[in-house]
Image 1: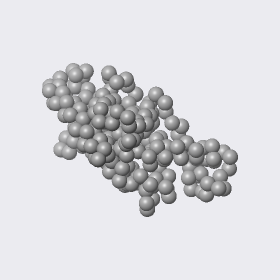
Image 2: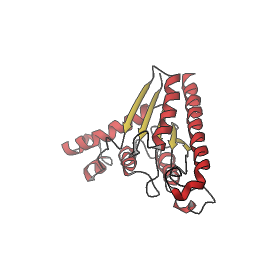
Image 3: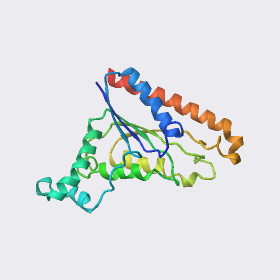
Image 4: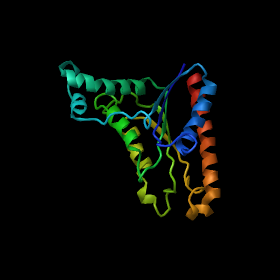
Length: 216
């Protein structure tokens, strides 16, 4: 049965987080198609990974047979994360925009899992794996909007996930998520609701399509 790797990084609970709500829709549709499948879940906000440090970084550029005990201990986590990615048939990532970019916890996962010569480099070990990123944001940073140049979520993740890890990246973007709680955005509530509804619909459709692909 297929394996889904699901990462959430929102600071907020399911009821308060647009990205968690949409990833939950995706996962629900996926699990309905594969009730006996495997889901590997990491809540990067509730259980954050340690930042990469000199020991774990240098271990990634040296022969494992020559690792010191400290390097072996530090590198074990990076190997675990790489193996989770390599075993996944599909990946689901909740990536809300914080201060124009991704949460630091998600950046830490990337720093740990990007291992040159294994998951990254000339022949990335998980190349081609489909990744669905739910990139929620409180406003709009779409092309043509005043804050288009402030968008560092999709731009960065496209380069990291596809450019470095070789993954097949698709984005779902629920935007204007603060409209219902921000008086100055009251005239955008209708657009916000439409964006949220489309995001849930897209997540369900994408999950079913991927589930069918790996169930064939």
